[in-house]
Structures are given as C-alpha cells and as structure tokens.
Image 1 (cartoon, rainbow, N blue to C red):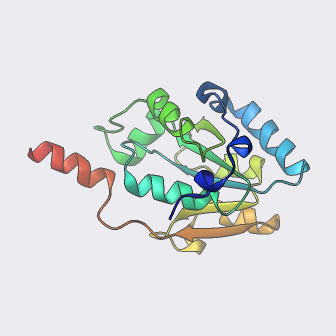
Image 2 (image 1 turned 180 degrees about the vertical axis):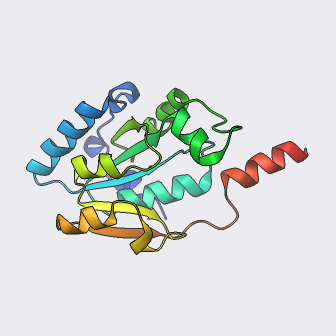
Length: 174
C-alpha cells in the first residue's frame, strides 16, 4: 500500500525546501498558530530522533495521517545527553533536524532544550499530541494541556525490532 503522499496527484504535493522547515521556536509557534487559524489540524510529536530508522519513519508517517500538519520538537544535544546518557546523541542536533526536515510528511521542526517538551506544548497548543504506544496516555508529558485545550492525545504502535539502542548495541558488537 502506498503512503498517503504518494497517492496525491503530482500537482498537490508541495515540496518545501528542507532548510525552510527548520525554524527557531518563535517562528515554530507563530507558524503553527497561523495554520490553526486557517483551520488546519496540527499534530505534534517530540523526541531525540538520534539514529533514524524504520520504526521512526513508520511512526512519523502515521502521526502525519492524524492531521493536516506534522510538527516536531527535537531535543537539543544537551537535553538528549541528559535523557540518554553521556554517549548520546550519536548525531548532533543540526543533523537530526535536517534529516527530519527532509521527510515529505514532516512540515516543521524546532529544538527544545528542556528534558521534556511541556513548555513548548503549552505555547504551541497542538490539536493532536502523539507518542509511541510504549507510553500510556496519562503519562505523556503535555497530555493534560492538550486535552484541556480541546485536543486529542494518541499513541501509535511501534514497529517491532527497531530501536536506536539496539542499533547502537549491534554496531558495538560488530
């Protein structure tokens, strides 16, 4: 089955230059609010996205299908190191932003420096907040904020057998 973006007529697919999708937080917030004012549903996700793999791609593609726009908050190198340990991230924040922005189903990416995206979610007020199904909705940071603002919180099943930690371990063992 073809992904949604392959099914559209060629004229409907709008290519955005990758660097235009990587923005500072202020522009991230303003752009999202403009889209929402135009009636578009904005889906928000976040993470380190250190070594992008099939599980990430499947997850983000499915997240995009939940709304009109997919926006991603990406942990800075400092906050990723705080969460994942001193050996992480493997790729620097600019590489991670660029890779995510290159995906056709990702509309906008920005960095956040805190250990959680709570503050960013408070100001963005996405229509839909998405995480992997290894989270229970009541434990997802920002779920309460999104629901209080009339939005939804969704979880998406992971593709089994794919994880950044497993890839790093396999590399170490080879």
